[in-house]
Image (cartoon, rainbow, N blue to C red; front, side, top):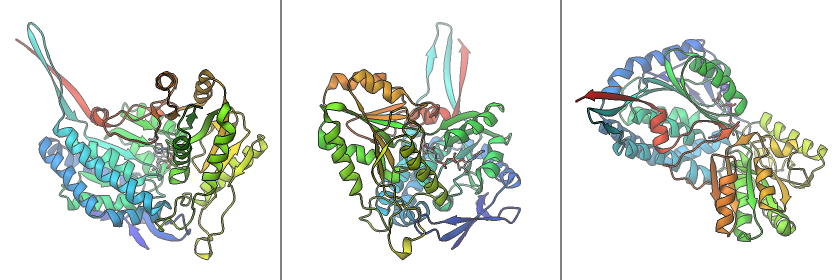
Length: 479
Ligand code: NAD
């Protein structure tokens, strides 16, 4: 049991109110920590510290900031196993995923943006009688708000470019997974960041998060979370003329054509559907399969999903961990009931597994495949954010694209085909920000990441993150 304080000006401080919130382990429901329940006054303190630190941090050289990011990456890497244990316990995710995806990616985020600012270029535009050159300048104090599904992975995805471009930071991690954010604050201090450059405020979204979005000295908000929350954050930030990046929900299709490599497509659809217990914004939660192979594909898919090993997240052989909270499991269960009411068949899963006394109170739910639903059903179009995949059949490419585009979201899709022409046509026609062909979740950190429609506004990644976390200033000199 630990107490997780706010981190302001490189000091660990409790909330001014003296209040705390419990942090529970999803696999057991045990309280494993309590976090400061911060309010507007704590956010004020953190923003004031960040504002004091901003001018000196903005004057540091690119090389100094890149070196700091590399130093942070070194410490993260050295503590990979500890951090993976923390993340696995706090989020209920499998230790294998935490060790191979979450924490290595946090290391890569800092290394990548160290390199990105070292190699950054801004423009020079020559006129016959003048010369324009463009300067990149930090924004000042930026606010980072992150969800619980990939806690350190997503916080570092924002913190690294924000710091590398010379901003000071106040972050508000999810109240459900605060552990690795507190560890990151320590690591950033250990790596040599001056006081006030990185600050952390724990607490609830409607209290600490909202206060951060509304604070007049916070000039940009990078938010990753749910679409409904994003709308509130957008309204509060937009009316205050803040720079805003919104990475929101998704309801992503996995399109499987008859000419796909069958085994690859089955394995890909399982991975896309159930990685992190289906709690990744990019998860392929609706499989659209060409009718001529639908029966064979669905049988193979269901067999593979039913065989996924669910259990103790700290066991390296476990493939599916717990859902984040009991409330979230109940939400997923309501969708399973809805699927039945909508005429769907539960081909596998949906029950609470018996994993023994130790996990009796854990938020486990056997992975679910639903067949027989219209692709327009609520279960097939609303984001569930859990281990639920619906399967639908199509006859033509156009029909597949229409089904895939028939949702409010527009984040990602994966297309499984060996026909190159089809891959290009379908990828171009899908209304999403990202398409994978014959893969899922392959990430090059230079590429634009983000969605359209209800999946968000703006792009992060590579130069897009550098653009977001900086202001460009053009200087025009008459010759
Ligand atoms: P959430 O919207 O409930 O919370 C996200 C963060 O916002 C948390 O830190 C929360 O405390 C804070 N928050 C809540 N209300 C707030 C308010 N009024 N003002 C400011 N901050 C507030 O989301 P969640 O349940 O933590 O995460 C799951 C959602 O995140 C899913 O919809 C998922 O698709 C989405 N997500 C999107 C991406 C992406 O890159 N597009 C990545 C991961 C998760």
